[in-house]
Image 1 (tube, one colour):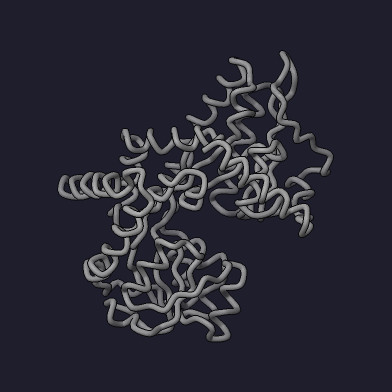
Image 2 (tube, helix red, strand yellow):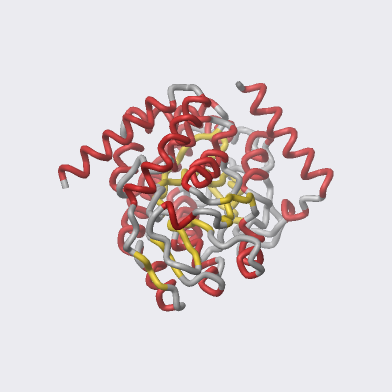
Length: 355
């Protein structure tokens, strides 16, 4: 497994060198570009610079959290830690950052279900229809299953610091979509995630893999008619300009993990690990509070921008249409993923009955 992971990292790094990933030489937010990204273990009293790659802007909730983390860790350590944040993919894509963490060119980033190439169990962080609410996601992360998933990240070379909840994914379109029958023959943008592609195709859509950066143009030109994302991504990508409806399918509740290179983490002395762990625990409380205080902000922004929210969606019909390909995919992946999915679903259903 370790050999496979390093091969993936080497391939991604070679691709950057061949095709000129100039973003990798980006300047940190508010910085000069004169940064040290050495991932060698810190000597006693030495300052450690953490290069923190983000795919979002500093104004996004994840960017706000990164800024808060930087402030707290630098203060707590008396300057022994220095955090340089590279927002808006200025250091490349998430895949570039993950590969860089394994070879020592960057220190931190965020990842979730897209991490499944390194650890198949990461798929469960955004498993469709497994969760009914954000509380269900929190319960999973804090369960034995969540611990097992985080251990898989560690074994792949990435140490989990804290997690951040994501808003549920919603389906956007130019007509109201209430049942799977309304999808029949309609062209839909997908990210390329095979599980999600399979389930939407099974429900009747005709899916095409299109990069997020190209989705606005694809929608405006009629290449596709629909896409799905959480409200923050719908708004930040200005999909309200080319889509009239948000159909509240809430088909995926999920979380994304803040990661540090396991080599960097393991190279810290006990005092520095203590500062980092304490700050990460504080950040868990901070991001949870921020999320629940602001989780409806982007929904309202989409409404204010002119979108109509369609709540008349038969979620059970969508779920029924999508479960067979979900089961087939997870069974094919092995690692007891289908059994784990069923346990997560049972936990979520039990939680729903309590509330």
